[in-house]
Length: 279
Image 1 (tube, one colour):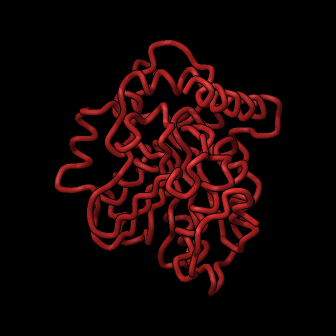
Image 2 (cartoon, one colour):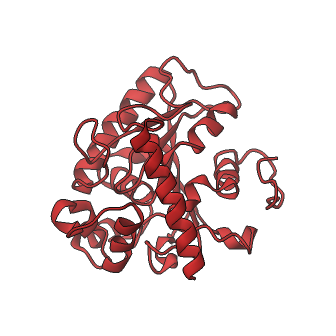
């Protein structure tokens, strides 16, 4: 277990380092995203909206997945939310307000692309926050599928949030400066409201991709959703020796392949090749 945590921490450190050295600025889009001239194709008719996690930003979170999706022919869009404009640290603000930012962004994407719906791929809080948009802000009519990567759907322990802060080099009382942190603690009033009456809304498909070694969303099974149109995927069911944890999943090629599979359900997908998943 200690080895897995160290690996995840090293990956997090590399990503954070790239942000500070100029290869991933908060105010810039990740490569492959936010080409506002992109028009969806018949093969991929829905734009993909990428939603980052707590303490992250779009440039940092989607360094790998955004260009991969673009190469595969998707129109890809990403936003920052829940932070100060151009701030390196995003995703800390009140989640309901962040969902309003997502709502406005999706409206812009649909207006520009003339697509009827989008698919959303979100990491951590970014896999859970869109559910507020779907349930309370009329987002269900505009979203075909939500793919959550290690989403905090049913919350985590305070120790899980502290672990995330430690991985990202942040210190201090998280819930004081981060309303979203307190809202993601298991048993919070926010999560009770979000999950009341069921985890899902009709008309939207859901996929959850999680890892047995998630040290932030704990237990990892709290990411899972229940209800119609839900597919819960454990990374280790595809690749038992994959040790990716909460941060490492966003650069894991196996996870990237699982995301591609969930976005393109028209194709027949065999078992993931763990040694060469993007092959």
